[in-house]
Image (cartoon, rainbow, N blue to C red; front, side, top):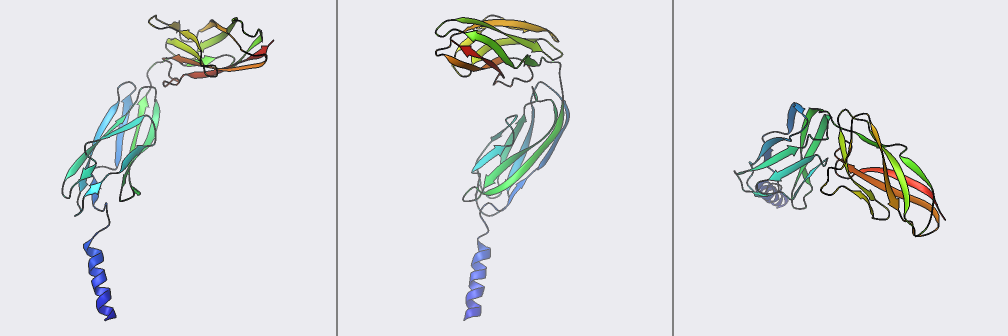
Length: 233
């Protein structure tokens, strides 16, 4: 009787394979080789369900903001396919790269299938922004009054850059905004002194983070961060 019971259980177990089993990819290692900085590079990977159960893709993730994916379908029937479009942004991401894309399947989305993408981006000439010194002493300021301060912005790159906005990270105040104008252009290897007004609200130590937005290589949309320090009387 015990032998019969074991045999039945074994048949039932193998008749229903693990959820997500049978997912096959046309490629799991993509080599882009040497590419030029500027336009993104793309590759489409085919996902095939070679099993007997529906495969539901719970989620996909990438190891870097420079990589994005687009899935044609999140549910793949047995014998059918879906396409995963992988896009790697080259602009402002020069040099060698080795990134991963992870596909999550299974009832709880814990079964992982990983794709690697590799390559090298040949850099194009571009400006590189810096503030010198990065922590600028603005001296003694007066509370509830507009105080003129200045910072030195340097272009350490090999092409011109344009500053479009300077924003106070602490006080959420616009110190400079080019708007529809051309902005502050800085030639390669040169520097400019930029002045603006700050209005501290209380006496004591003054400390502010300034976010400088530009088209420089080291600004990927979040700005370059510098600091202002001083005292308020």
